[in-house]
Image 1 (tube, rainbow, N blue to C red):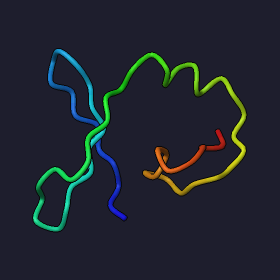
Image 2 (image 1 turned 60 degrees about the horizontal axis):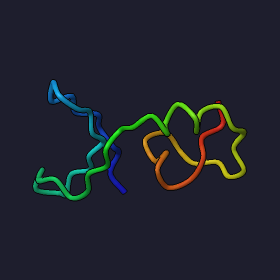
Image 3 (image 1 turned 90 degrees about the vertical axis):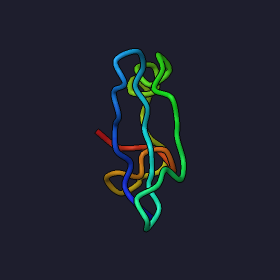
Image 4 (image 1 turned 60 degrees about the vertical axis):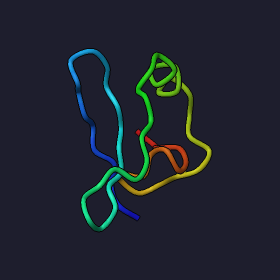
Length: 58
């Protein structure tokens, strides 16, 4: 599984994954829910760069 990278377009921010050819495979919008999500304790642990697949323990 490839790591996510943050892309800031100037008007919004997105997390994207790229395929082996470097093309965008998956894209998720960064929203206010990210801040709310960080305030809750994680139930499942994931590896760095895979935060959308589960919770991250901080």
